[in-house]
Amino acid sequence: MQITQKDAAAEVKSRSEIGNLHAQNREFATARDDFTTAITLEHKRAAGSLTEAELLGRLAGVLQSQGFVVEAKQRWREAAALYAAALAQAERPRTVSRSDEPARPA
Image (cartoon, rainbow, N blue to C red; front, side):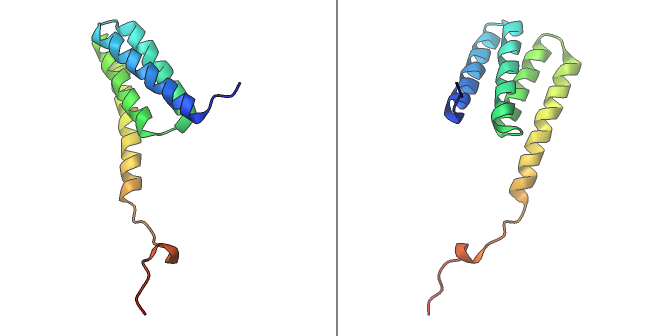
């Protein structure tokens, strides 16, 4: 059975929210697993997305809470790279095609 994009997005959101709850309850190992699963699903769904970057940041926070500072820094770097790519794309000038231009009065 094939999972639709909407179902995949809902699965990512659910895993993320469950991970947040585990992190709030200081169940860091379980939260780490939840975020890792959510990241894997999101990467398959939309590699390089802002959601993936956000999840990497959350995972980094959990890793730091567990004392895995080196791995946490790596996840923050990965998240920062995704945010930087999104920013670079947003800052690129958009080319306007003739169909995008407003009609001119005759």
